[in-house]
Length: 98
Image 1 (cartoon, helix red, strand yellow):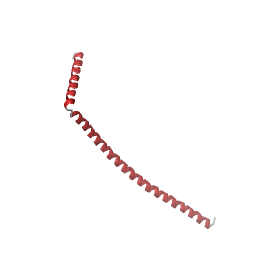
Image 2 (tube, helix red, strand yellow):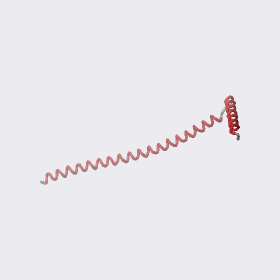
Image 3 (cartoon, helix red, strand yellow):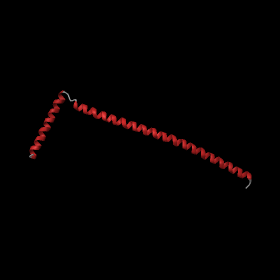
Image 4 (cartoon, one colour):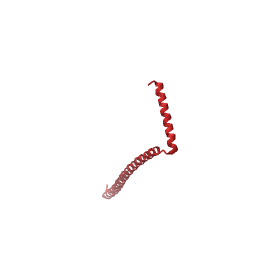
């Protein structure tokens, strides 16, 4: 082989190496960016999870408040239902002979 063709081969090889180094650096930068995105998404997920738990607790409290804030006619019907349930329980106890 002559010196000219060796030089050309080395130049081609060096060009390909430079291309690979550039691609590596691009991928490395993309990897860093993707890791940051994942980290941000995980933080957002945790924030949303905490918010959801808070809202579920508030909803549970609201339901409990609604049940406890029975008024007027509702109170009378609730008392009648409870009395009926107590009578039914008493009958069941009598039938069991306890």
